[in-house]
Length: 447
Image (cartoon, rainbow, N blue to C red; front, side):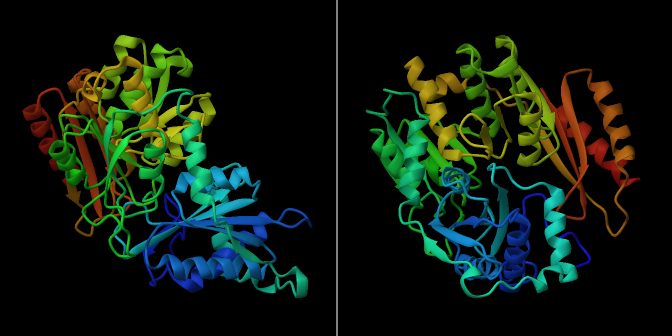
């Protein structure tokens, strides 16, 4: 392996092609299983998955790998990523694996590994797993007879997670009288989403809740919320909710059909928590790509925003380091550390609904605190050239922000997935954002 096996969110790729093959999954199970065993007691790993056809292949390969080094495996079947994190902690497992490519099409798949604390394992441990696979270090570990691991399914995993999610909703509060459209993305939330809301009293209009192994994220879900929005308007619903394939992202729509991305949901939750006095330091965490309208929404309430590099793991790290509890990304990853150490779309949606019910107003009213600052996104192709250094990009960015004098934001960064440099400009006037973006793209191309 000449490239790093793990990316920013586990291992990801086209199913049945390297690195997302049964052979690699088996090796990952063996290596991770060895590293998770710290003593001679029996060790347990939980494996969850979304609804992709290739999950069967990878689930069985991972199970074989873990069992071959003496690990006991528990299988949840299709379950949102935050549900896997919760049940792993509830059952005191030594770790967990989620098989999912999140919002990607069904042809792709991925492997995310969690430690026993429910957080994604650090880069150092991922690199250790990759090295063990590369060097064959795990080949000599061959327990025999009754030391070989076993595997069994947990029949009530979905029900366990639904009860946990419901417990996050304020005691005594219900959703009676609300019509809610729920877009399950034909993914891991196809049972959890509708059932949770119905059990809390809502009238639920489910869409994209019939997975067949191939239709996950197929023009539906948080990346494609247009059908959810249209259904809200057509059905005269009060709220719309769209999940992604593994249930850790959420996008909402108010009763007027206005789409609310992660920025808007963070603003709703941040203002609500500040007003209730439960947001530590009146501060939430997001990434450098979040919209400047988020700061503007929180400012009247004394709130502030900390920014990290792109990736929900960096948001979580910042939350933990600073003793904070609310964070997320514009994509809809919303982390509420009080309830779960990973993005949890269902819990985030429930907290937004609770904020609406407390005030006894439509979602559009509480969402009105957030007004998106116009932004422009450009790609500068590298055309075979080496990536510019971060120092060069930072210098261009700093010069631009000095000229903006607080009236906007600029982010310039190399893409982690394409041979391009991404330029983002936010400004209160869209024409100025476009002009600045064009100028910056030319400067980057000249490097």
